[in-house]
Structure formats: C-alpha cells, structure tokens
Length: 98
Image (cartoon, rainbow, N blue to C red; front, side, top):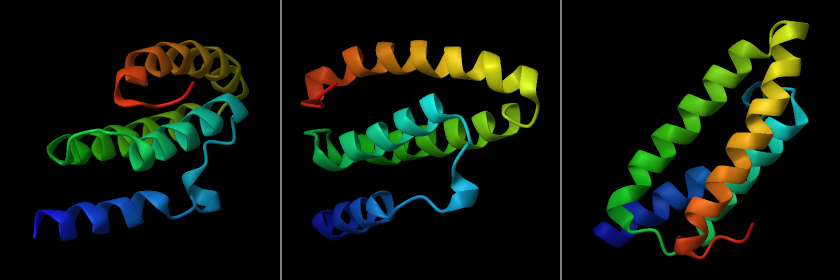
C-alpha cells in the first residue's frame, strides 16, 4: 500500500506543469521544475514526500501571485535564484543534482 501511494504521488509530481502552474519568472519556473525532478529521482523518504509536495505547491502559488506586477517579478527572480541555490545545496544529501 505504501508503494502504491508513493507511486501515485510520484506520477502526480512527474506530470508537466500546465501553463497556469508556471510563475512566468524563468528563475522560479526553473527551480520549481528542478525541485519536482529532485523529488522524483531522490532518495527522500516516502513519509517526507507529502511535505515536499505541499511545499512545492505553496511556493508555486505564492510566487505566481508575486509575479503579477513588474516590480514583483524583478524581486522574485532574484529571490528564486538565491532560494534555489540554497535548496540545491540542502537537498544534495538526498541525491539531488544541483
């Protein structure tokens, strides 16, 4: 049962993001795509996957809202780049490639 749940979660993560799931800010979209790929390919414990999936959705939603203005988009690109670099380092322990 646990394997089935993990497989279903992996499939939902693996599905390409629809246009409405993108932020429109390249640095953010690149990071979100990397994060989802990391979750699929890494050695994260199955118990942690729902937490990481929720974080992915929260980031996507929040960043999409911030990208609604040109000022927000400029600041967001820098933030996503910095946050992405930090997360890539932190998740390297799970076997995720930067």
